Image (cartoon, rainbow, N blue to C red; front, side, top):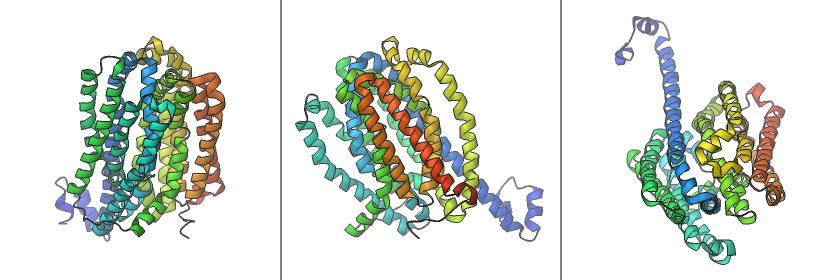
Length: 456
């Protein structure tokens, strides 16, 4: 009864339930379920707020920037950030999935949690240091980069910020609110700075600098928050722990690297083979698509630690949970996709301006990606990774990356931005279909498999 009366709104029905044999345990189970749902809701709300800020705040500046910078300079900025994106993939090493899972499992053990935290952080910093010489050599020795050395050098701030930011830790302990508060605060300042400091096409280098400083600030504040708020014990890792951390994330890293072959690479290849203006048309269309995708992407990111825990306890419960999630995705994504496809020209004209009408067709093609990516997230990340099929997951994604690369190299010289959009759509269709077939073949959806092949 004492436990029951901790709630000020305790009802007579609750008390009667508690007085029955096993009533207290039943109430605790119900409370744990309610808390679990509340955590998911808070995390989803936090990530939604974060994604809204990630796209709403830039959308406030987006129409301004594409008009002030023009397709050429806007394309150059995105070309430079795509180049830095490869190094960000290296320093992140897929820890947003592999490390988040380890953190989620160890979150109730302070010593184990601290050990894993420092192992991942030291590994990321080591990867940053090792990748720096390759970054510098490319900029100074390769002709397309040497022409704009200042812009490309400043993108290193983005890489450093990514190395410091412990998003994987906050995801693992299911505290997305901290990530949201840090990101939103910094990006509000970034938004104000854009209107103050960028007034002409020469503002491209200023935009890169502002992006880099924002990334560095988010990384530093995020790291300080994790250290101060969660009272972690300082446990510097040895080479063995760093090696194990790299081993744990290896297959996810290969997957994220392969994914970059059909995400980051398209802007990069456009900049190399079709020029900055073509890269600008594609990047502008893709920014709007990413805003739509964020609505579904943060949901997948939110539920990943929960599905990891559910699969470790009961495969059947995990599959039941994911089937409900799949229905929600289909009900929400399909109408949004069709509505935006029908009004694509109007959307591009309003957001980007008439000088970006070349972006309409690529935008229509890219609009199908959010739904495909949401589906592949369920079959690949939520199911395949959580049931131990890391190698098979990495294999599918690598094949998709190779497919995109081949198609992009063929299509971009002839169709430019439209060719790049077609290549990435083909790659995503391949990923979703292949992962669905794999899960179906293994009958995971039927029996809720919890087997971890690599650990068996």
